[in-house]
Length: 79
Figure 1 (cartoon, rainbow, N blue to C red):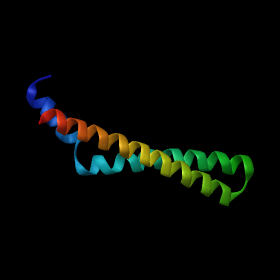
Figure 2 (tube, helix red, strand yellow; figure 1 turned 135 degrees about the horizontal axis):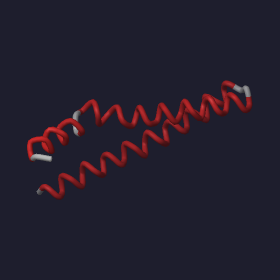
Figure 3 (tube, helix red, strand yellow; figure 1 turned 45 degrees about the vertical axis):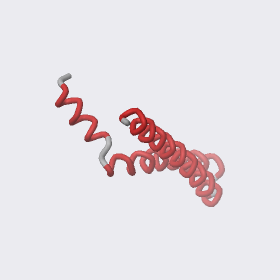
Figure 4 (cartoon, rainbow, N blue to C red; figure 1 turned 90 degrees about the horizontal axis):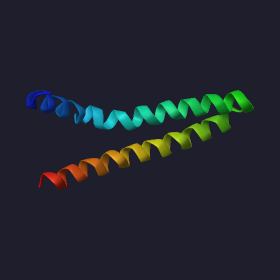
């Protein structure tokens, strides 16, 4: 891979939309899976919403914190 291709790839992976959508997409996907599973097992919509919402929040926070720490580490290494 040439230097220009690496720069283009890193620019695309660090776009503002990419930084914000990745935690939302990951949390939403896992939250929806858990929502569907709990709804299938218990047939209780409120319980499924609660558990799905908690899973969404946890996954969103973990993914966001990971990206934040990665960006902070890259900035420290560049300086």
